[in-house]
Image 1 (tube, helix red, strand yellow):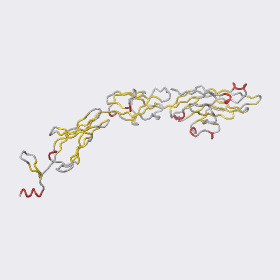
Image 2: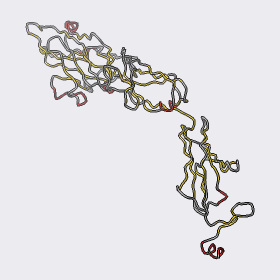
Image 3: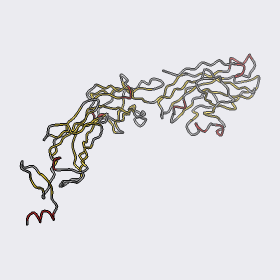
Image 4: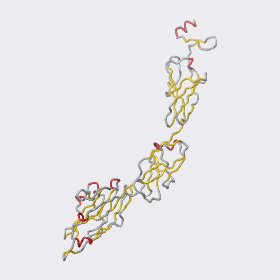
Length: 350
C-alpha cells in the first residue's frame, strides 16, 4: 500500500508575495505518489511557474531546492532536510552524491535520486526563491515516495516458519511497503540461484534437504535481494547408527562406550538401548551413550539403539560387542567362570 500523508498548510507562511501575484506562482508534480525498489533510482517529475516580470523588472530565480520531511508532521523549512540545494554545501549528508537536479532555473524542476534506501521514504517538496521581489514558494502536495524491498512470505504462515517433511509449501515474493508490478523474479537458496523459477511464487513438497535460507529478487534488480527467510523442516530421525569407543579389541575390565547417533529435526529426545542376545531393554532415556566402566564377559552380545523425536522413531543396525579374554577358564556349562593372571596361569599349567 502506498504511504499517504495529510498536511494542513498555511499558504501565507509559504508564499510571501502580494495577493494579486499569488496565483501566478505554481509547482506541478505530474506524479505525486511513487513506489520504488530499494537500491534503485527514481526521477521525480516536476515543473514550476512564476511571473516573468514584477512591474517593469524581470523576475529571476535565485535559489532552487528540494527538501524532505517524514510521513507525518507539518511543513517546516526550518527543520527540513535538503535533498538538493543550488548551494551544494547545504545538501544533507545522507543525500550527498545520491541526488541530481535534472531541471533548470526556468521551468523544469525534475530530481533524480540514486541508490534508494528504506529511510528515504517520506514526502518531498520543491521550493524556489525569486528576485525581485524576494519571494519564496513551496509546491504542494509534494511527492510521496515509498521505498520498498522484496520480502519472502510463507502462505499460509506458520509459527517459526516450521513445516513437516512431506507437506506442501508455497513461498511468495512480495513487497513490504507498496506494490510493484514486476513480472519476473529470481529465487535463491543459501545464496545459490534456484533454476527455472521466474514466478513470484515458489511451491514444492518439502523434504529435509529444503531446510535453509531463501531469498528472492526482481529479475531486473537481481542483486537487490530480500532478507533471509529461514524455512525449518521437521523430520523423524534417520541414519541412526551405533559407534564403539575405543575401537579395537575389548578386554575385561576396560571402559567401553557405545554411542547412538542420529540425524533428526527437532533433535532426538530419547534413546533406547537393546541387547539382542537377551532380547531386552538395557537402557532408556535422553542420554545417547551406553557406558561400561568395567566391561565383563557377560556384557558380550549384539546391541542396537532406537532414537525418538516428536515426529517419529528410527532403529540402528545391530553391532556386535565381543569381549576377548585369552586367560579365561570355562565353567561346567561352557561359560567363562573366572579370569586368572599370567603368573597364576603359568603355575596352573605346571
